[in-house]
Length: 510
Image (cartoon, rainbow, N blue to C red; front, side):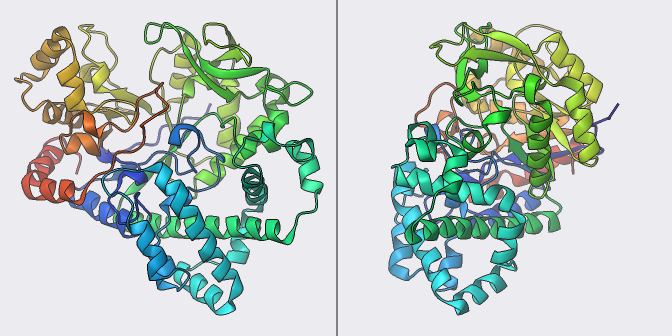
């Protein structure tokens, strides 16, 4: 049986999505924005940088509802590159620089950046000199990139072009000759449509070339990147459109069941996500091959990988596709241990983290423990007066990552301020504190915990209240907008970095 444990030393890192970093272009990016943050991580003596999915954002501006599990988010591209290579001019760049710097305005990003990227792509293809300059600066060949990534890139370019053709509608709303993937592949496309597909390939090339340069810089600074893979693909995705055979679909390609979570004490109504679910029972080999390819690709961009909703590999909640509520559903058996044994054969050196939060079934706990896979502990969940609470530091396992909170939680300061008096009292007694600086208390608790890795969300490090919350599950609006400001980092470095580094040293995490 494969032992998936990989964490050796006590260390810590920060959780900050790329979108949240300071920049001049309305959203964090892979250039100076990311490199400055990596320098900050190094100054703090961190070992890890955890990010959310890097894929294009879909419904609700969420990176967990993406059009592709392979493609990179074009908004993260460093637009300084286009200025330096003469693919965009000052007046065009100035439009992007006029976007808000204190939050991500996705409506403005959608209206501004794609057109700029299209202009840059057209100038790249119109001049061989431009092509040589770009390839030298990116240290990457466009032709080789397209060849090496054809297994996903060709379908993504076609899918993206067709979405544009149908005004952004999901593939189930397209006309029959395009709704059917095999028929769409056989269609003849106009010169303009073919150029659009090439433009999309160019954009992805620039993204991943810049990303790998950023990752190389991080690794040179001894910073490892923890990436995040949602277990499910989006309904509006190229993967569902092109791979109906691996999902729970009827003979006409319509979903029979969708993903979610059944009713529990966290959510009496359950959670209806609507994502396609894998047809493990009838298409195990194809589902496994899909995941092997996906994980193999992810290892190029992440040093370790957190798999969201790990439980579904053991058992998952299948909701009839026409249901309006998550209450109606069935627990189904997942691929369980066999899947991870097959993954280990294909990718013996992969480093995985299981997102095992919430209520787990006995079979999910057994799967996690049999694999000895790194799990998650969240301190905000610890203070319910139950001495057996697994998130209390004295109950935590070493082969785990301890978080003050995650991207789905409120900031720790706001969590404490809005908790009931019983929870606050438990917190104060446990940490022998007044609660006046609750964010420092919980950071101290995470750093001193038995978990080999401690991860602190950037908002907690800065001591932000509810204005720093990144995402509220179940609310599709107003999420993923928070951004750090330059003065957040400057103020922290001038006032608190010495204290924080002393905590790291006491906790044995430097």
